[in-house]
Image 1 (spheres, rainbow, N blue to C red):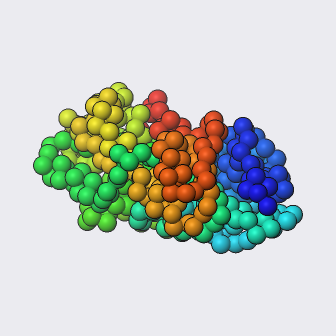
Image 2: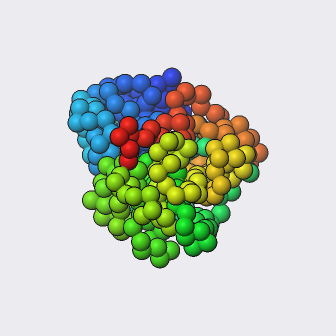
Length: 345
C-alpha cells in the first residue's frame, strides 16, 4: 500500500479516491471533509460537508444556511467508515472546532493537519498528537526565523501600553475568526476586567464563541460610543480597519496587530503598526519540526507556506518529503479580513 493509494494531491486539494472525498478542497466537490472554518479551507458549494459541529456552524454563519447540499457533524475521536477507508477528526488547536483528519486504509495511516498550533489557547481544544505513517503538515511559518515565544508576554506588552497611555485608545488588529477571540480570552486571563470593544464585523463570530461557552467577559460594540469614552480602552478589529477612516473615531489611537507575521518588523512598519504583538494561531518553526518528529511518520508532505525549508529539514533527518503544489491556501490575512461596515462599527 502506497500513500498515494490513501490520499493523493490534486488541483482541487488532497483527494481520497477510494473513499470518494477531498480534504479542504479549493473547488466545489461532491464530498468535502473540512478541517476548520477559515475561508481558505472552508468554501461553500460542496455537495456534502463533513466537519465538527463548530466548523459547520461557523460556515453557516459566514455563508448562509445553504452553503452545502448536505452536512454531517462529527465528534473528535469518532470513527467514520467510508467504503474500505476509516476517517477520524482530532483537535488541531488552531481555532474553535479545528481538526486534523486521520485517514487509514489497509494499515496505512495518513494525517492531514490542516492549520494547527501546539501552544495553549483558552478558546479551543488543545492540539492532539496523532501517530501516523505520512504527515501532511502546513508550513505557514516554516522558516527558522519564526519562533513565537510567549503569547501571554505579548498580551502583557499590550496591557503595559494601556497603563502607560491612559488617554489613548488601543486598536488591536486581529483576524475575525479565532485570533480576535483568543486575544480577548488572554486579556481576561491576565486580569483585564474592563469592557473590551469590538468592530461590528467581529460580532457574529464572537457571540458564537460565547454561546459555545468560551469566557470572553463584557464585550461591547464600538458603534455609538463617544470619542472621549474610548480613551484608555482596548478595541479589537479586523486588520483592514486599523488604518481605515473608521479608526479616526478613537482618541490618539495606538495601532497594534496580533499576528505571527509581526516577528518581521518590516511588516509592522509597512502597516504603520506601532505595537506589534507576536501572537500566532499557527505552529512556529519549533512547533512544526517537533510535531513532525513526534508523529513517528516516515514521510512528510508540506503545503501552504514556506515549504522548501521544511522539506529540506525533513530530508536531512532521513524522512521522505515533498511539497504539495496546491493553489488556494494561505494565511487568513489574505482571506478573512473584513472591510469596515459603511455605517461604521
